Picture 1 (tube, rainbow, N blue to C red):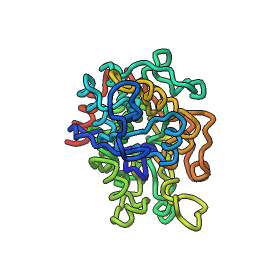
Picture 2 (cartoon, one colour):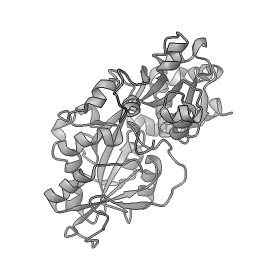
Picture 3 (cartoon, rainbow, N blue to C red):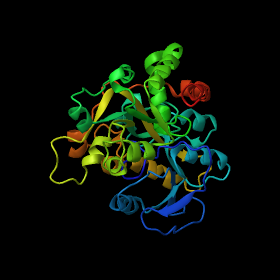
Picture 4 (cartoon, one colour):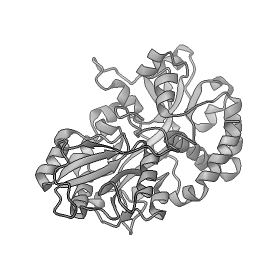
Length: 366
């Protein structure tokens, strides 16, 4: 997902197979001042995916509070950034990694990327988000739900109720209306697949996808193409001539569609099929071998602090992990609350991810 309308996540859509070079950009000041090693270093380096965004004044506040400047090192989409961190773990690119989610978490933990650190304020985070509880190798920072979004105008014009559940999507009235992302190359695409597996189980998820294919689902490489080119409900999609009124995106996409629109509409032009959602949780962790351990610990504390947590929703369109962080009105008015999103144990994902993607590809892409 692009940096202005993130996944709720997110985030960049593609989980790339290649490993692009990392690009550094300044956070609180563009200078990498104090670039020497050790805890005397006054720069702390945050390695992340391309969708990491924080307000400059928020990062400036971190510098004022701690004396550390933040240098953000972006490494492509989430999958590529995690893979790069694994390949470079003997000489880590930075001190802290942000953006490994529950679909990739076990890969990072199995490769022993992180030094345990129990962040200050972790007691403000619900237990359901603490997937590494007790070991504290990673700290939950945000969460979002990947769901089917729909174009309200299309369904109103057709006098057709929009779909609400996975089961609805295979009904004849929704034939040829859905575009989704490739589970091999896209994190929303993979999350949508995992959502169907969570809903239908090991024995019948493939049957569901056969029905979805027979009902005309379109598969594109990534979120950018699906949402901004093919989806008729987004501003970019309408401009591009998109003709698909259903798309796999985020529960936080509707607020992004009305951000900056005046006068504010009564509702967003897009809605969310709340029975099609899969929850993504993003984590941060102190990279093993970090040169600036103390600075890294301070940054992790800050990422979980109220100032950053309340800045994050309108920067990256994700929900704060801390329960006491207030959501902006844009989220509460236009966003969709997902009472029962699909979930899956990260270890189960790790054990079956490659197998599931292979089976999905043979069913859907052939």
